[in-house]
Length: 477
Image (cartoon, rainbow, N blue to C red):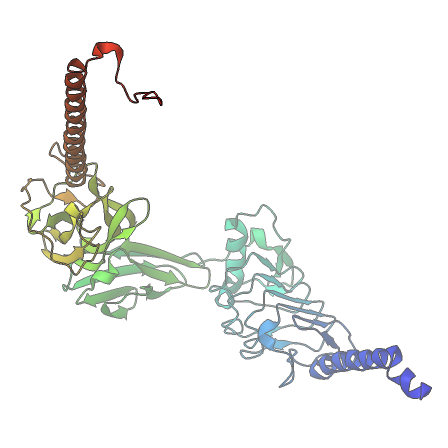
């Protein structure tokens, strides 16, 4: 019995813990290639025996390769190639180091799916050439290439250009081998007919009305002759391009208002680097009220709206069919502007039942207009339950004229009587009249009582000595 107790006590717990720890260490060891150690986020390969013949890959059903952020490889003389699909599974990779190894070739698309890469170190390998196409889509903060036997050619001139243009003052001591196998400092390398290209974009006025079409042309130059391509980003409008030698055309048809403000670039690229010329597209279109909602209460009451339009539309509010007068008590506020989209509200300061009704917003520019209406209920009429479904008495509203409010202005002030202020003043005047009437009634009543008492006093036989409240009668008769 004591033996059973001991096995199910602390000793048993320690044994189970050891088993789970051993299992946890065994699984990564099985999933990890020979000469490497692996964790959930790191692969480290530095043992030259037996050594790597290919880039390390995790075995199926093992740790998730997407979680690997660092791969360190050293002293692997048999590792010579990085193929296109060797690193694609490590989409979270940020740091890649391959040093003192036999790396000779890196496929052009090796890092195509590794957009998170920030640091690459290829120190002391066997690279004789390396194309900028490997890295042009990456936002690298560090690329170390010291100790590689590069061949002096136009293929590596981009490395020299990169060294000259980068903002960091630190430069690498890089060399290449010329035809005589002599080391030439890369900083002194001069290759005939090997320079940066140029791009020149010729475009008409890029202010276009929605639904129209436009054609852009671009000329490129350079030696080696550059390739030309268009970078249109997330352009919504239908577009097509054609290229003939060093000239290209981009045709954009049925232009959408959603493309206003977007950038279009013509890019020239060769072995040494790239150049681009860009223009911004401006699309004019009629206003659209995309959002109008019932009023909400915060510090002030607000009827929120969103308007799209270019050029900047003017706004006009109507209240129960009449032009709404804007003032310090009621005015249009624009809170957020996003190029051709405006988010704001009609702000009302302490509205009352006098401000209940239909509010219509009209947005207008030279290409057209749009309007939408919303019903607003702020409070019930005095003496009537605050129920928006009740029928309220008709009220005659004055038609105060006001100029249209440009959407860029936050307030259109006027000398006319503000609607909400007028309601407050009317309420105060009614209360004042009621108070005067009540006070006058009380004072009049008090005067009547005093006159009555004085009349009684003059007719009393005791005169002004006072009133006799009790008369004492002798008990003996």
